[in-house]
Length: 215
Image 1: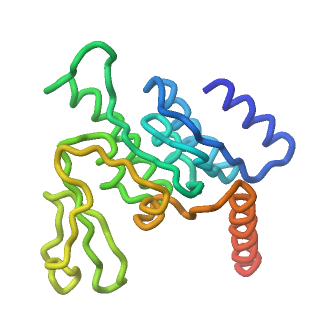
Image 2: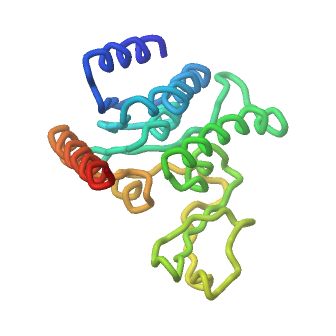
Image 3: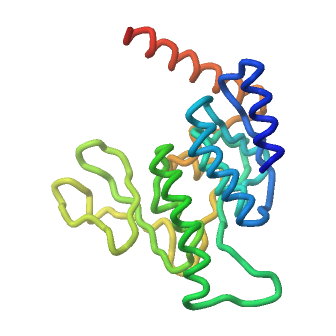
């Protein structure tokens, strides 16, 4: 966390407006990942545009850090997800497991709200007891994601009969790059880092055009 904060501040001091974080990790300590996520959501994202570039894998804490970025761009055939907390050498169940998972789910929800990712899918990366469905919104034509208890019943607003299960109960969600893009977690899937830079540059140009048009 301290290394990321120091280097981010150095880049901002040099005039950076976009920061791209190369993500390749199986995870690590919850506290460190939570500190990085806090820094992105509460501070860094307000000053620069943050991008998680998943170059191999964003597993466990890597997923938590990635969704704290405003955009996720994934290299083709990479993966993201599987963020259930574990304690090495012991099994944690019942109230103790829920006590571990609850703040992590809250951190994912915060990022989903801040950065526009589907919250139900992010929750399924943390907890095995969740079942998630995708249901098409008849008004927008877009897929939306719901836990079983929250499934819509208004058949005029949603294609309730055409719902599709994305995550079964007992599974932890891990997505390939193409799945993450289809489900609205990855903004883009690219062939190499140069494509990532090109996508980021195009997005920045679009933001500038919108800003100028509104003045």
